[in-house]
Length: 436
Image (cartoon, rainbow, N blue to C red; front, side):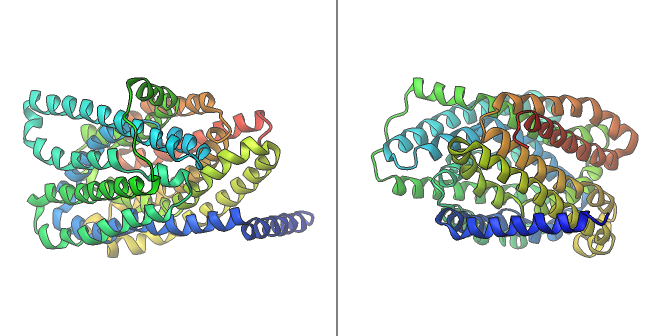
């Protein structure tokens, strides 16, 4: 044990000196500016909803709060399909063509066209399902209120601003609509029957952000937008296919978990689980700005100097794992005292959910570094797809068993275990490829 402390101190000192040198460079300063901009945007995306959460939870009650969560989970399927794999594939393309406005415009319009086609297909399919099944017809109106957010996701161009490393625009298009529209929840939502209004207000904010993002991107390009072509649209779909499958595999099981919980329990149980999940998602969002800012850098850096980038990746993995583990432990201990005050006494059952799920913040942050900044940035798309595919398959097997055995707490434990599995598999692949 005596040799561990000096070794650890030396490592942290070396990491600090290396980080200080990097952040004094122009690249480092740009990354820090982007992190600051995205942090503000994430505050609007997650912290503002967390401000509204106690009010909606109290006014709607666990059952109707569960209805909102269930509709959001169902709408998420269409959002996932519409966004395809463009958050990674289009970002990677645009990052490599930062200095070519014409090529950037071509990427933008063809991604837009592809997303429009996917959205229309999702809308037609979902309306057909809701109208064909009598028990679902009363929920069609609420579903369509939520589906408006999918229109916003078509126009939303966070991937474009991320690729050109001008994240301040993401802040603008996120913060202003949510600051203006979020207070409407307090004005309009007055009782349990107003749950559809919650979905409508949230969707209106997404749509406004999408329109604003499209307008800003159009002005930023300074060139005439070309007409999308079928060949180019198909090329975008083909390029994003593997990351789409990986994204769907990851997010499909998270949305499906909520749906399965509803099928195997009831809306009140969904309300308890969803309230805790939203709190944890807000904590997870603290890492997201850093992750998004670093992704374009790692894409370019792996191409320019793989060995040096691999060393940086190793340092980042250790740092992220250590910080998030300490943070998760603190939240776990504080949850019994804070949750009844924050969510109200009706949501005491959400305490256990938070105490378990908060450790997914550590697992997800770590596997994001390994998977996104490591595997995807280095071009290991097929391996990444196999990892999340294995995780999705494991989830299909484990989730029903976990819910049957432990209800919503069983689901929380299963969720954390799946994220840990992803991190272990990604670590093994990167180590095998001499990147860790």
